[in-house]
Image (cartoon, rainbow, N blue to C red):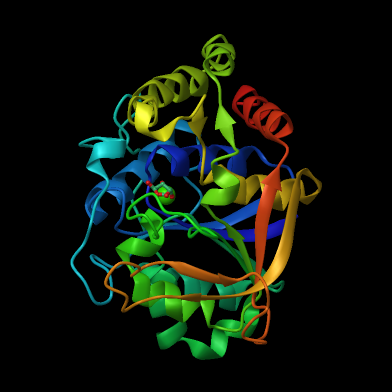
Length: 309
Ligand code: BDR
Ligand code: CA
């Protein structure tokens, strides 16, 4: 089993990533840490705890992360995920406590005590991981790879050129993307293909367990934002679970290695992941950028994950 740590900001699609990761026979979740992003840090931490309570996973250590991005004020996505960060969800209150150490310390202790290298999965802003790399550089070698949802090749969803997770904390993203650790990027070019259609949500609603109605309720709410005409989507893009699906079934995906960096100063482009598609800079190809996903297989995997509880 591949050992993973998930750093997330639940968030509806983060919650789906947690569900898939818990259900995945290929993955062993060593720890969950939370970042400030989709909602305030207290709410994303509480949401991770509520999700793990629903999934009966109180043995997974959970720690809250930094309260704000490295350099700028926190931006939240209440317009997408609602006042709680997981509006629409039927969820129990947490039945366990987070560990009493900060996220970066939990990551450090987890890496130290793992005999095997560990994959970091990031589905929110990269603040915690950037801080971790600054404080514990000696533990970098214990990280096998970082698989993250963020960025895009040439589009945006927060500004025309920036994706939300990178836009919230561009400086942290720059640190992580230039860390030298092998990176896999599930950006918007990919995740906008990973749409769930209404009839597929109805199939989930029909599953008889405690998890399915919660997911269906979450998708009903999350779908309101992505149902706006401006997006021109047929379904709802499920960004964050693409990271977990890739770890489980890389054969469902296509991708290419490119040199990627993060723009932190541009007046119009701050937070853009600049992808050197034509190798114009002749710099090391530091990121495996996922470009295609087999949508139906992905939705089948997600639905089966939900049904497995
Ligand atoms: C990303 O931003 C958040 O709203 C989602 O949870 C996802 O991680 C998509 O841009
Ligand atoms: Ca997220």
